[in-house]
Length: 133
Image (cartoon, rainbow, N blue to C red; front, side, top):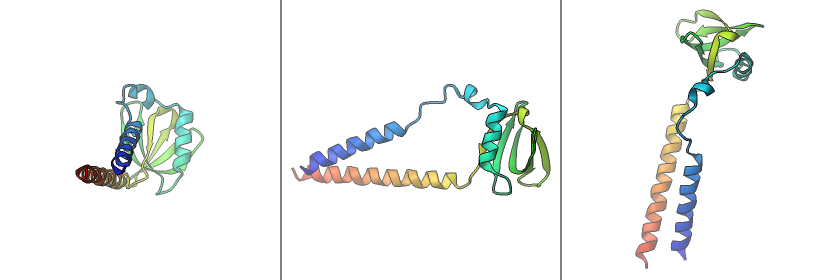
């Protein structure tokens, strides 16, 4: 009985991991291009101030990292992370914006370690259950 329950749990775990897996970024070029309305919406979600850290890619290929210090009608002011130098960027010249909330690497590593440990424990439980037979 225990063997059947553990086998069903392992099957559910495999299905859940496969459902969460994303396919390769085939259409990334189309997804990267954002309209000025999308850029405005993403910057509104990020907010303003030193906590509003973003990475901005311009249509000419330049990449800027910093925080949004001010929003205007047709542009926004991005301050560099290291030098705190202001850069005025027009919404129309932005191709992509990423919000940097921080600690994503630590969070993702913790999740990976937790899932890995759970998988190992589940496998050991299944092995122990099969030895009793």
